[in-house]
Every structure is written in structure tokens, then in C-alpha cells.
Length: 314
Picture 1 (cartoon, rainbow, N blue to C red):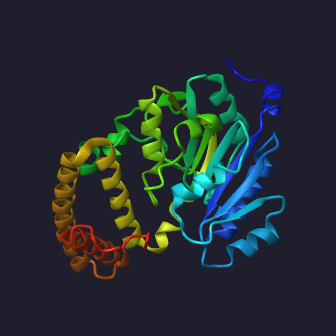
Picture 2 (tube, helix red, strand yellow):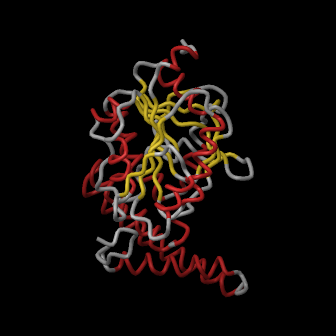
Picture 3 (cartoon, rainbow, N blue to C red):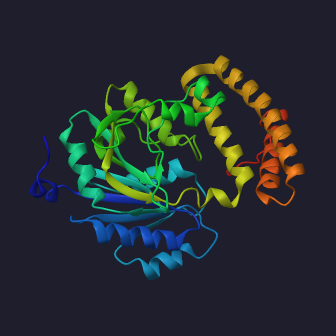
């Protein structure tokens, strides 16, 4: 069953965009939404304590947009909840600032989401800037995926890239959610400052016997990691903090300890291998940067994750 254009036009849709020091990307995302949408949308930008001129820029360049100023870097999950709590729509799209719609994503995704009574969340196909495919569907994390190669686990999923299908988990640069269901699940877990908040939300959807849809007919570009790339070591530490929190929450202390030991050992081998490459090719800056990040991560593990070296300084 599909929803007609007339039916979709009666649906109220809100879009919540999270910004942290990327005002030009916000402007580009809003332009692409308006250029590629056939239905009216209400756009809210949540500024997560940007340290640049983001708020002023958005007020001056992005007309007819609501701006919520958190006043501090509250983390992605908290910012999303703050934005969604302000909307009254049937469907809310949660978006990163670093996206660009390539077709009528809004209508296509709404059609699929409303056509399935058990569906709670839907995600479009993600593309890299050069048009190549970016991973949107990911396996539910477990010790195997986290201690081996994540890309191998993704390849084993055999995701349908032509037709809409039900999946276990997706990444979160653009997610459409039924607003009532979002609130029933108590929104995002705000103990996740950054990373894994959408993974946790997807697991709670599946645990409640509801569906997550991957909609490859809808396409957008994701300019991946523009905020996190500015602080690579802090971002990797934050990723690991969120991963440990996810494992403690869903799998308990024993699997979390196994994950910790496995990551500690793996980092030692990463340092050794990257050091050799950096010595052989000293002119390659990226290997020196990788080595530095691995060493910081290893020391942080050695200090039992105590130093606040992640993106959340609180």
C-alpha cells in the first residue's frame, strides 16, 4: 500500500537539524530540503552551543526557520530531544547539518513510513560527495562486530538497495520518526553525548517488536563527520565512551569488560603497525596523525577511561 500525494499533503512534517559550528552546511541543507520537497515542512535548527557565529548566521541567512539555542554543547541526543519536544507534527525528520537531499526524500520516506503500521523509523540511502554509496544500514553491535572489522559485518547484511526493506539498525544523519512513537520510547537516551544514540534507539525499537525501514528510493549526500573531524582523538574517545555505555546498558558488565580488554590489545597492535608505516613513509602526514590518535586512545584505556579527553568535557 502507498499513500497518495493528497494524503501526504495532509500530514504535518517537522524537520529538526542539529548544528555545531557548521552554519554554512545548515544553510545548504535547508536549501536542498526546500528545493527538493513537494510538501510544506516546518524547520527547526537546534544550535548546540556553537563557538562561532552560527546563531547570527542562521538568523540572517535562513529565513522562516525556528532556532533553539542550547547555550552549551549538550550532546547530540539532548539536542535532538529538545528539538523534537517543540514539534506537534505526525512525522519528524532528525537531520545532521552535513546533508544534501538529491531527490524528494521527504515525500518518499513519509510514504513508506506511513504505509507500514509497525514502522517507527525510516532512513534514506546515503551517498558520499562523489556519488559513491555510504553505509546507512549497519548490524546491531555485538562483540564480534566491535572486535573484528565492522565493514565485514556490514557486507554480510546483503541489504536490498532497490526496494524498501525492514532492517535492524541504521546510522543517523537523516531519520524520519513517527513522533508519537518517539515519545513512547522516551526519545534518545541523553547519556549518549555523541555516537551510538541512534543505535540505542534502533535497538529499543526492535525490542518493542516494531520496524525500522531502509528506503533506498530516497537519496541524500552525507558530508560525513565535518564536526568530529576537527578533533579526531577526542571524537574517537567519545565513540569508545558511547560504545562502552551501549554495552553496559544492553549486555552487562562481563561483555563490557571483554570489549575493553579486546580494544586495549587491538590498540597495541594498531600502534605497532602504524608506527612501522610512519617510519617507512614519514612524509605521509595521515599516518602520523593516526599514530598520535592511537597512542592517546591507548593511554586513555591504560588510565581506565577516567580522563575527560572526549568531546564532552563535563
